[in-house]
Amino acid sequence: MSIKNLFDLTGRVVVITGASSGLGVQMAKAYAKHGANIAIMARRKEKLEAVAAEIRTLGVKCLPVTCDVTDTNAIIEAVEIIEKEYGKVDIVVNNAGTGYVGPAVEMKDEDWNWNVELDLNSVFKVSREFAKGMIKNNYGRIINISSMYGMVGNMALPSAGYHAAKGGVLNLTRALAAEWASHGITVNCICPGYFETELTGDTLNTDSFSTYMKATVPLGRYGNEGELDSTAVYLASDASAYVTGVIIPVDGGYTCV
Ligand code: NDP
Image (tube, rainbow, N blue to C red; front, side, top):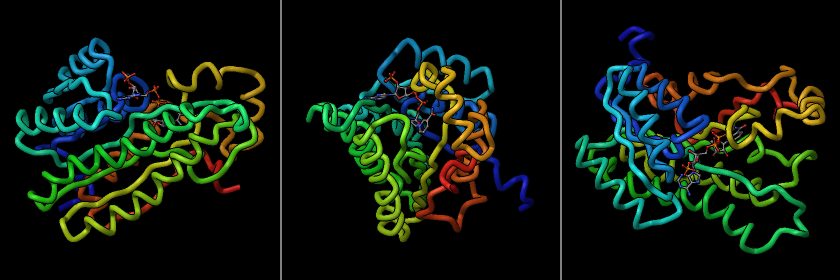
């Protein structure tokens, strides 16, 4: 098989959580452009339906599934719906997430718990439920979207809960990679740097944060739309068949200094 064909996802089914906005939508479109059928999960039904309609114009199927990924029963229901529609799931991208920003000493238990629930526990729960089918098929690719903040601390935006949860995703990735390797499942993790989305737009578009970014990101700019997609496609494709348990920063060099 030529290297070009290794990235072809025709016939594959990709599920992406948190694909009603931001990076999830970008990755969903990238997978669709590589020929995969798609299922997108998030809470906002109308947004999901609009994204699904756009993805279908790319010539593949796209199923919008309303689901709160912190709710185990909702996840189980979503897995049933998606497996019924497509007969299988090959690739899962755990992308849904958000973060509480505020000084640690002012952080309430519920803010901490919410962060860990959404940014770490949901990654485990979604992986667990889809892995059951992957184990039966002896094939799977799980891609966790952590953050460069999962690899290091930061001095601009106090967010201890987010750092802790995203850091947990790194070692969860390694643990599941080791546990499920014998079932033909790879588990890998991407740590994005600063990309402008609904989550980050208000923060990134300030003079003070741009100045901070220029001082801390070696490439001296924010990530552009589409710059996460190539890594996401690589980890979903046969090109990464011998790669598991790795953490890939896509951060303009933030974590190398
Ligand atoms: P957005 O806010 O644009 O997207 C977040 C997505 O997560 C939305 O689709 C939202 O959909 C979904 N989501 C949030 N809560 C839940 C929930 N309880 N159940 C299901 N879906 C949920 O953010 P980004 O695209 O920027 O972030 C995507 C991922 O990338 C996150 O994990 C984030 O931490 C990570 N990241 C982003 C960076 C950036 O600079 N943008 C940097 C590093 C990491 P809905 O509200 O419809 O449920």
